[in-house]
Length: 186
Ligand SMILES: CC(C)(COP(=O)(O)OP(=O)(O)OC[C@H]1O[C@@H](n2cnc3c(N)ncnc32)[C@H](O)[C@@H]1OP(=O)(O)O)[C@@H](O)C(=O)NCCC(=O)NCCS
Image 1 (cartoon, protein in one colour):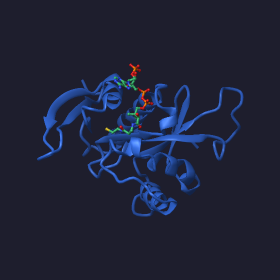
Image 2 (cartoon, protein in one colour; image 1 turned 60 degrees about the vertical axis):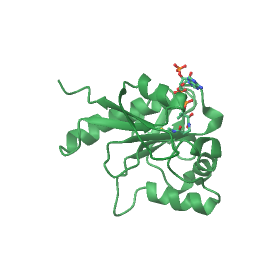
Image 3 (tube, protein in one colour; image 1 turned 135 degrees about the horizontal axis):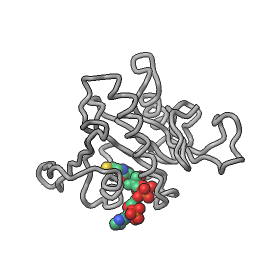
């Protein structure tokens, strides 16, 4: 079942049956080049990566979510199982738990899905994670390549503000650090 639904999307934790959609996303060089991860060359690569992001005994509630395109109202069945296509992934991939990341299937770029999903992720983060874990910061950060205007735009649409430029060392361009504050904090 979805943890949260938006107008067009559903977010839930990923599972083994999402492998084909997951592989389509992570095997696309055009998408991966903007991340700090390697492209998945084989289905086995993707299976290993998917397993590490899925609920496991040592991490039963990972804070990353498959983003599913829901069917139009009236056409949805009682369960999401097998019905809907996973078009992206959004979440906190790093151990700090407060750095956002996302990646979408290239066939679905340009429809506002990433912004819609990131907004939903932030709602889960503030309302479910931060209220339950007082050690988490009241901000979420994101690091983005300034040459990736679509991603910079997604972050700004979701309320992130520029903080600073981070040097990546010789021969590599800077990264832009952005941050958004918990809207529930006065
Ligand atoms: C970045 C990414 C998630 C965006 O997904 P998406 O669903 O197309 O995003 P949205 O449609 O919600 O928003 C994209 C915005 O960028 C804008 N945009 C797209 N390409 C752009 C460009 N070349 N220059 C300026 N703006 C651009 C769009 O117009 C849109 O803004 P708008 O709603 O004001 O018109 C997707 O391209 C992706 O998966 N990229 C590869 C992985 C990645 O970059 N991850 C983030 C790493 S920090």
